Length: 259
Image 1 (cartoon, rainbow, N blue to C red):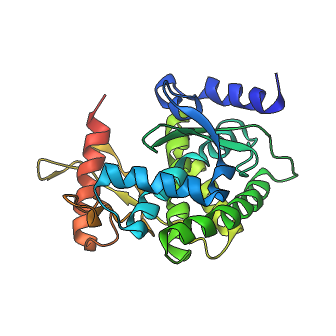
Image 2 (image 1 turned 90 degrees about the vertical axis):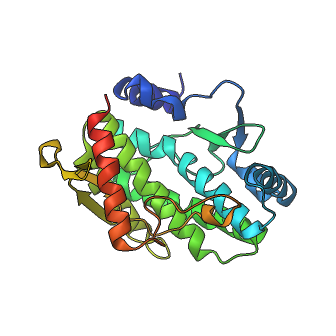
């Protein structure tokens, strides 16, 4: 077994089976190297497939939606392994394959190398910065857009993957702290991580008995609302603060009550 396979196996042992799907190749999915982003023709094809899914030909919207997905999943092996084992798998494009479906959706990722360094957090941050500096420019070029919004999406993806991993193994507080340390070490233009802790609201009533629930205060917008027939996400920065808070409190109640 390779060192990367050993770290992955340890992470999978710690993660509940229901949360392990992004680390396993799904039925019907193909492992596609992240370096495929370097090929403009391949990237154009991904945007065209997204256009069929969302019924738009706005390349800025399509590139944003595609990156919103990919930025989540190419990082997942590195973040899940760091949170679960203390050792981070590499997020570098040469080391990661995303789990790609024929309609351009991405369901997870696999890394073939373990990062080595005296401080796993700083080592991951350096590798993540290197990865983003490589993959953000071609995505921005394909969408005819600036790079900064894509860095913001990557920041939200990083934070949410840490929160997911921490919640999965029952150590959300430590994972949230790791997310902040990694983001700060990556540095600008990656925004800093900001959390919001809310009291659930169920049927119009406060439910402090369900405890506070942590969510990400998003720095980015996925632009889904610009696709035909779509609206803004519940936590969209384009909503008013009061709207976001109400929706997060309702989401917290759902999370707490569901088995």
